[in-house]
Length: 114
Length: 114
Image (tube, rainbow over all chains, first blue to last red; front, side, top):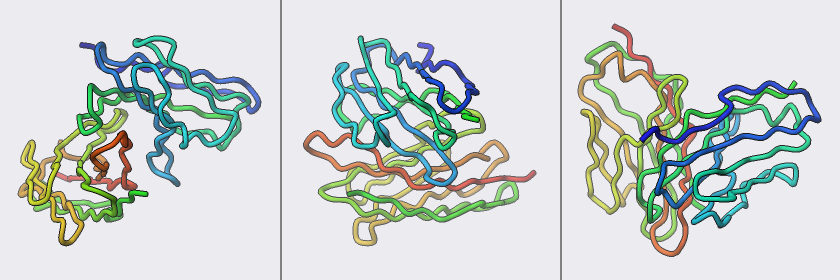
């Protein structure tokens, strides 16, 4: 298996622009997680899905952030409009079954908002 | 909510030195404990885990014992290698119900010099 795939790997955009991050989980996994990593705040869970349904989005920082999972093999995280403080590395992870199982992380998308 | 406190880095060691990275947690219910490792430019990978008190997780020469009485899960390795240079994250999740959220510590950067 190719593992969790994220695109793009790097994104540089200007403040106010819309940004869409993409994730393909490992085939067969039924949980998908979006995290944000910054030096100041460390690794934060933004939202997670079970069987394509959002379960907990309490970590989404504000209404500018939205996430969707239209099918079992694809998810997006959108920021509109983007701000410089959104600059971070965004990770997608997936897991199979119950939450105590290993989460497999993608390589991340490094987002820079100028 | 759950929280994790791990020793701040960076930690710099010589090859074959002994490693300890301290981790303490607060959590409700019966938490499970994890150590994840992040190599440069990559996503996190599960290193080891323990799901109940007194369990010892081990992998690649690393060990950690779930100590409920001290709410700790310290990571140890008897002889580190240059290839162990990475950021190490302690994490906790509570069992039961539908809480599949991992709470991570801030991470500890380990650099091993030849």
